[in-house]
Image 1 (tube, rainbow, N blue to C red):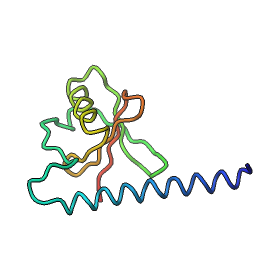
Image 2 (image 1 turned 120 degrees about the horizontal axis):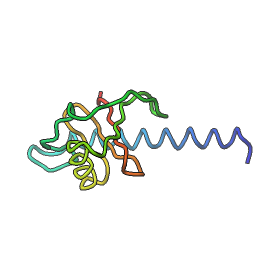
Image 3 (image 1 turned 180 degrees about the horizontal axis):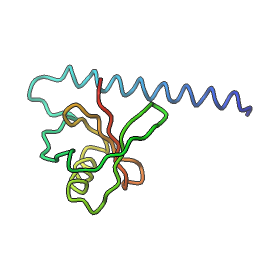
Image 4 (image 1 turned 30 degrees about the vertical axis):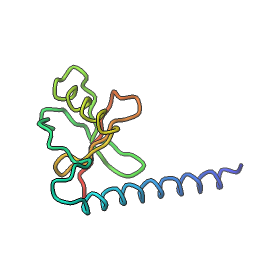
Length: 108
């Protein structure tokens, strides 16, 4: 397969992921009041986790890797209970596949 075709498929894949994320965000806004969704009322204080600026295929985000930090450990546990992604306050938070790194991005 040519490099041009591979690049086109990667772009389509990334676009579909963004569309799926947008659908998830929109569906969360349609949930009735009090319904349990992916948004958490967690007690984890995200400010107690050191975040570093990073760039990804979907733009800038912040990442954290601090497995000795109790707040990081608690957030990892909560994310695992929510299939690796959720919304906390103004942030969309996710766990990377290797489960040793967490990302966050401010929702629009």
